[in-house]
Length: 373
Image 1 (cartoon, rainbow, N blue to C red):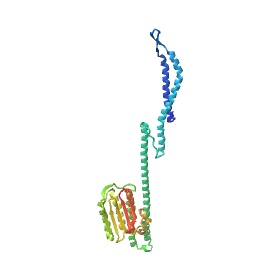
Image 2: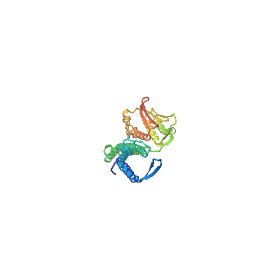
Image 3: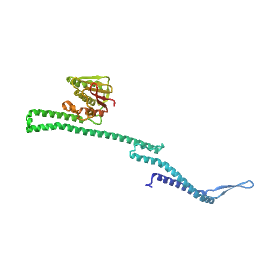
Image 4: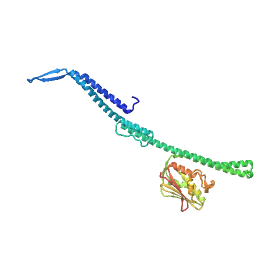
């Protein structure tokens, strides 16, 4: 019995119970019915009624014995039909739940248990559906998190590869100069001159390492700081002040326009770091006599600088770590190649979108940072 499936098991249990009840009822009828006595009333011809009691045991036994095969056959047939109906009514919903759970085991997103009643089986089907919906939601969230973690790990790997490649050049140059100085080869005999150059390379390396360490601390998937409410229109003039001084020293016209308030709820230091890198790039790549303009709206900030537009083929690489356009490969002129990479990383972490595109008139570049997620 333990190895039988649900339908035959319910059928056998039900049929045996009904058969047992049928046999017991016939047995009791056969045992007790003959002991009953009946009163026979007879009217005489003169109208006088006489009552007598007859012992009819043998009559009843004979009648029951003759009717017993037909009665048992009919009772067994009725029991069989009722057992089949009851077993089907009980087994079919459970079988449907079993088939559906097998589909759920294969993570079929369309699998749903049919709910045809409000009894315990119907409640069970509802609970299974609810549990499966919750499971699918959890799996989707885990897959999304896994994707983000994978992207973050890949970003870290790419960044470390780029950093190691970028650091290798000055280290190699420093090693070559020191070796030539030790061997006293050619112009490297003038140690005083090349010691100064070695010191400059060492300072450059120190600065690069510091920049790499600061950038490596950025969180590639989540906000690295807790959001806080603030109005960018209040902090933007202070943030732009140092770059105004640099622009003035380089004979660059630097203007700031605030059209309306810009209330935000973001990690403030991260946003300031984004704007600082953008403003630094704008001032660095603008020639004397040209203009840098910063315009703030309620939902975005626009930074424009007049310069030679960046070629379209270079735009897709600008946000890669340590990338510098061909016309700005010199570190003193072209920076360290981490500015826009930091901008891109922090913007993605905060869920902000941006565009960076050339301007036709006047010629230059325009960066738009949108605060609506």
